[in-house]
Amino acid sequence: MRTGIDHLPPARQRELERVVGVIFEEFREATEHATGPRARAQILKIVLFGSYSRGDWVDAPLSANQYKSDYDILIIVSQKELADRAKYWAKCEERLIREYMIEKALRTPVNFIVHSLQEVNDGLAHGRIFFLEMAKEGIALYESDERELHQPKPKTPKEALAMAREYFEEWYPSAGEFFDDFQSNCERGRFKKAAFELHQATERLYSCMLLVVQNYTPYNHNIAFLRTQAERLDGRMVGIWPEGSRRERAMFQKLKEAYTKARYSRHYRISEEELTWLGERVEELGRVVHLICSDKIAELEKAAAPV
Image 1 (cartoon, helix red, strand yellow):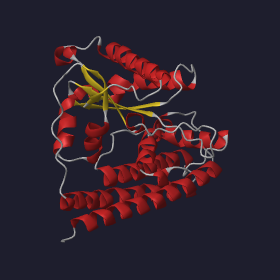
Image 2 (cartoon, rainbow, N blue to C red):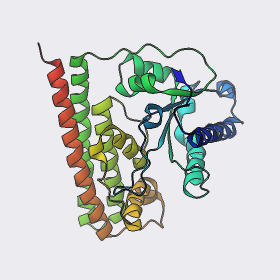
Image 3 (cartoon, helix red, strand yellow):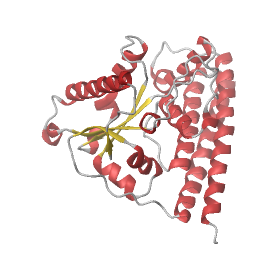
Image 4 (tube, rainbow, N blue to C red):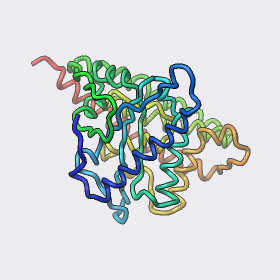
């Protein structure tokens, strides 16, 4: 795996140093009272992947779509249990968001994924495209374990086609079922329940696209994070959610929060008008996901066809 980020401007290099520092501070706090095997908890590697590792990032907040690339980070830990996002990484995520959104200590948003070394190596052994690309393009920002990752084993065209079809046939209809439940609850005036069902439809659409295109989706209910990963893979996913006004940006945030607040917070409110607008955007998301997945499967069919 590559090391060194000299291709980035000095300000970006310093910013990534700060991100690594925050990751270690929050991980240390989350594990300081661990006992048993978890008392030996370690971060083995911190890997920068995506546009900032490739050198094709975009920073155009004043453009028509206000697009700005995120830092994509993979954290590799010593034990699978340490990848539990709710238990070990929630405060780290909150702090990175706060430093970007409120304190302005970071100029660039940060998305991170956590996996154990075994999970990463299994992903490489099974030819999951995300891990293959990460191993090829990733840059180690930190390494305490000098062992090389397993050699990638790409799937054969037939294997890749079979997996893509299986993912699409499972996840796309599942999203549709949740969308049906959303509509049904809207008709009955159960708006909080409808918001949760719409969130689930959205989450499954993003997961469907990620699984079909790269055979991997992070286990994460944060649709903003899934959205970023999907937009990174295909430009057709960009622009589905209008961001021209504060209200439009707030609408997506309200859908994002529905996963927990629509179920557990008595203060969560959403109107029929807001749900109608959000439902239309999710229908558009479904259309684009279907198009991208169909194109990918057609591409795989062509590659798997006998010569």
